[in-house]
Image (tube, rainbow over all chains, first blue to last red; front, side, top):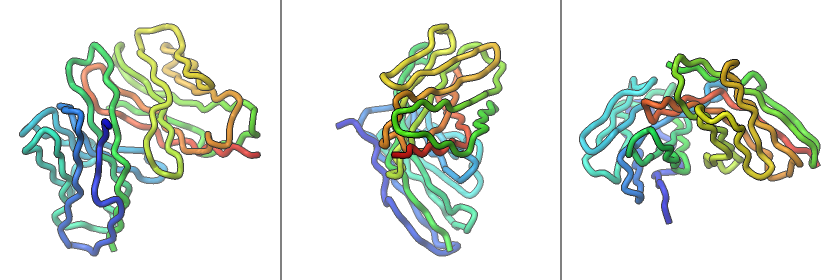
Length: 116
Length: 114
């Protein structure tokens, strides 16, 4: 089954304690992205990756890091989480064979993060 | 950056009736994609319908249809014969022809009443 998986699904942590949210896709997609969802703001892109070892900032990258060492994995790293990073996080992936034809973006199930 | 605006934070509809959600966007691009996503209480993001900007015909998917007005930069979603399972938050989203990033509106919570 084609899917994007995220772990953990729920996480409660304290300020300053480093954490990693994993994301994996089994569709051999080139493009992967992280979004955060906040009430009244919709989803906003944090970071994205066009392929292995190619990452770039989205609209709200402050306080986050990512890496893309393998095509299937795109972890989100919070080195020193703060309460304003309490949010719902989504990983997504997309085939990237040219934007002249549409390729659906697949979303993971979401990770609810609470930073105390 | 593209801006997507959903001006209705909440809407309520009686089962079997029709509800229309509004969405406007701002872009200088001529080629792009527009989407409506459904997010039920499970939080899963589910693609409901998409529209390519170069297509004049409005997209339809079963009970879901859109009214795409390119000149007005408007993209509304009509849900016909509403069902209890349609209760969810609905997001309008924009994808530039040159990028895979989705820009989302703030969302509209739809409640279908029995």
